[in-house]
Length: 208
Ligand code: AMP
Image 1 (cartoon, helix red, strand yellow):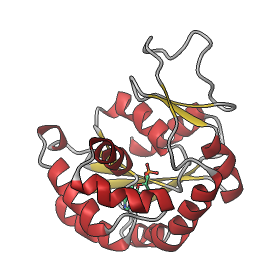
Image 2 (cartoon, rainbow, N blue to C red):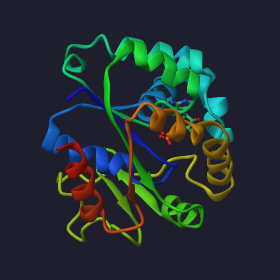
Image 3 (cartoon, rainbow, N blue to C red):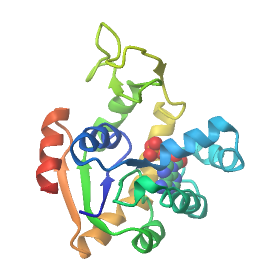
Image 4 (cartoon, protein in one colour):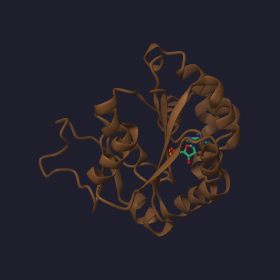
């Protein structure tokens, strides 16, 4: 198996599913959103530039993203393939990716727009272990996160105004990748408007 692309709108559950698939496949998760948030937190040059776009719910320029990905793919753990989460998001990104890694599956998680806003607006993560929860749909256990050191984190861009802009960017710039990958015989989609384990089961079946 080569690398996998997890595809879908913001809030589809790509990060949640990436963690669950990682337990089965061993492929490391490569999330450009997580890499950008780390750069913003560190106050690096990339972080300062990216933050303007992220706060607006717009896509960060391809050149910035591709520089990050090229560097990440040089790390030893990427040599056996990775699971991309939130990348590629434009046709030029996909074109460059095809020169950097062999993609064996593009797995799309379908969630209708009207469900996205409610899903994103209650989203919360544990800053200690990265587990993703949702206030209504997947609450943090009453005993706290399973890692034992719950550290509640909410994303600055998980608010309704920004989510609507992120959805617009998705439809205009990212959704055309579905046809691009279909033409290459790599695209598969699952209904993402269901329980988390049901979605994982379908994704794992597609990988077998
Ligand atoms: P995510 O965590 O994937 O929802 O990404 C959060 C934000 O980071 C997005 O709204 C974009 O501003 C930026 N971003 C993440 N990945 C990419 C990408 N592949 N291309 C452009 N912008 C990205």
